[in-house]
Amino acid sequence: MKTKLVLNFNPESSNLPITHHLIAEHGLLVNILRAEIDEVGGKMVIEVSGKADSIRKGIDYLKDASVGVRPIKEGVRRDDEACTHCGACISICPTNALSLDPKTRKVLFTEEKCVACGVCIDACPPRAMEILI
Amino acid sequence: MTKPNRVSSGKGKTYGEIKARASEGNAMVMTAMEFKKFVKANGVKKAAKEVDIVTTGTFGAMCSSGAYFNLGHSDPPIKIQRAWMDGVPAYAGIAAVDLYLGATELDESNNMMHGGAHVIEDLVRGRAVRLKATARSTDCYPLKEIDTYVSLKTMNQAVMMNVRNCYQNYGAASNSSGKTLYTYMGKLLPELGNATYSSAGELSPLLNDPYYRTIGIGTRIFLGGGEGFVAWEGTQFNPGVARTPRGVPKRPAGSLAVIGDLNQMSSDFVKGLTFTRYGTSLGVGMGVPIPILDEDMASACAVTDDKIFTAIFDYSQQRRSRPVLKEVSYAELNSGEVSIKGKRVPTSPLSSQYKAMEITKILKKRILDGSFAVTEPVQRLPLDKSLKTLDVRSEKEAMK
Image (cartoon, rainbow over all chains, first blue to last red; front, side, top):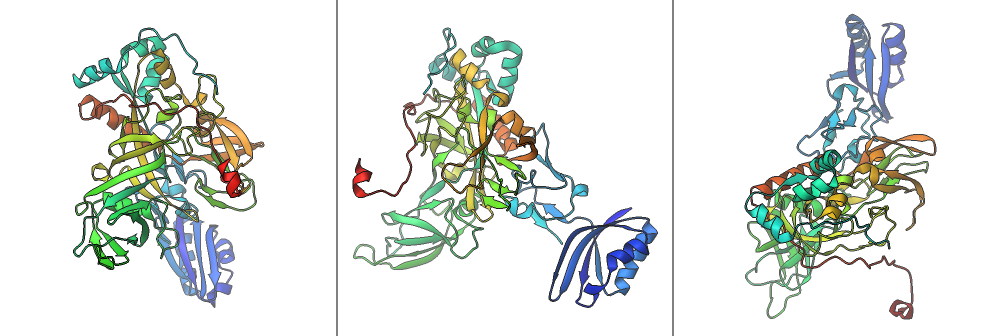
């Protein structure tokens, strides 16, 4: 199974080799989607794949290490009323989560493909895209 | 410039015949999409004979847009000198209580995110807008300032008046530099990371009437969801650019100045837009019915995206004339990817082809149910205009 997690670090937990631990100790595949760090800690968005039991154990490990863990179902949301289907977003989306339906010429948003990189947010002229993490 | 390529015209139809059929509900009306398919299957001759009207449409960011308002007089009266609508400055130098609000005028307190375009959309949505105004007191207009709310319900007139809309073709954009550029053509990724383009191509009104035979001053149009009119040639009207053998311009050419009542409009087709680090613009939906007078018009309206070309310009050059990276057809641009210098470059249309198609369908429906009457232009648009530039010059040079 696959799940996306938002991890919040305080300055102490920022120094822990947590991705190594998730990979080596729990056999998880870790894909880092976003990472930022500043003077008060940091935030990371990761996608982990592996057995459900391993993911649960990995999350327990993170919590024990004082890392804030929040699973996310969606990272970016589209306001369908605001979207004009102009397509400004489709050529900058690195995962093709945003694409143009060749027939209706509507912009399709495939949330499963979205890695919440946020590139589309400021590229959307009617400001229909919102990042939730 | 090249002359229109005349195909043998046959007898054709008159505006009177087309209008009469439309008013009786007997006109054969097709959307641009339907018409192109019809011509492909049946040929131009049959199309010219059987089809009366083709509806075209476009929806895109049209920066040279705005609206004027008459606010009604206050008591005591005021001759407004400076005015702000929801924090966005409006031009007040037209007598006492008339204002013009431009789409790209920016909110003075907001980081280029909110502007006149958003205020216009809010008004169209029926919202109230905060009006602040100041003035020099005069004997006839003593009031010095006012702080109040206005909406379409409180105003005498609220009229969209756009000096340059509906461009006949437009250049595409890409970026060969090493950094992301934020432009009115959207976010351009470094190293030719993407390309954007903004014409609705084969659906776009002026690309279906390349020599402005039926679209002229006085033409009734669909504007922002309501009814509007072509008021004049659009600014920067430049019909003399290179054209294909069939007369379709290969560069930005004609444009339209349009006018229409804001009260009739809908936020589906009037949308405040923000282009990061460029500012605001207004998304405007426009539709124009094209009467199929003869085979020439049928042939013009049969044009498809593989026969319409534009250039991809390199926006990394911050100059008036940017280098051309490549000539492409709209069919290539619409495929989602073009090749530039051996690199596969993903493309984004900035104009909503979905909304353009919606507009052609709505316009067709309105013509068929008799709520929209097709018109003959009062005057043709000029074919002999060329584009001038703004250069630093002396007083004498400016008068030459």
